[in-house]
Amino acid sequence: MATDVLLDQGSDGSWVAVDAPVLAVTGHDLILDSRDRRTDPTGFRRALVHDGGDGLTVNFGGDYPGGVRLHDAHVEVHVQTSEAEVHLPRDGVAGELFVTHVTGGHGRITERVDGEVTLWLCLGVGAARVVGAGSATWVPITTGAPVRGDA
Image (cartoon, rainbow, N blue to C red; front, side, top):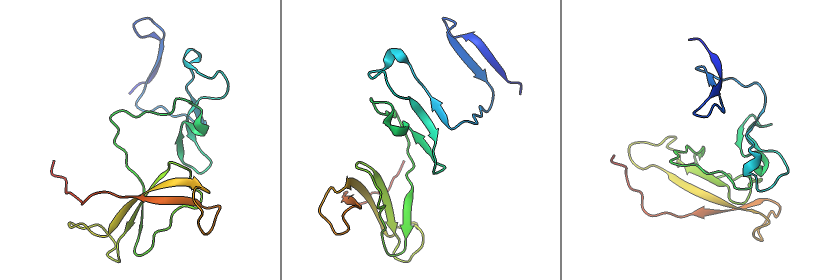
């Protein structure tokens, strides 16, 4: 398939379109910045960043004061799986969510509900007086009884 950069696109000719099956960017920051929509005229607007931990960060550094909204999102969350113990991150930040699955030695999820899956909310560092102050404090988010999907 041929590729093309198309200028003067859109109904008013103000768009630039890239027509290609893949758009590869070799830099580490993708900045989206509309000066007309800013509430704060200072700082960067790093929408996507290939961060130092080889991860993809959206709204790096909280550059967008209005936050990030995901409409009709399907999110897959990393689950820490272990046979016996839960190890929560020491460096969590307030509002962060973490999912753990303790298998109890079974090693995998089977047809029946197997093991304990817990959703944890980070309260931040120093949020509660606990042994090991300086570490993040986490609380489990409780739910009702498990229900199998049928759709």
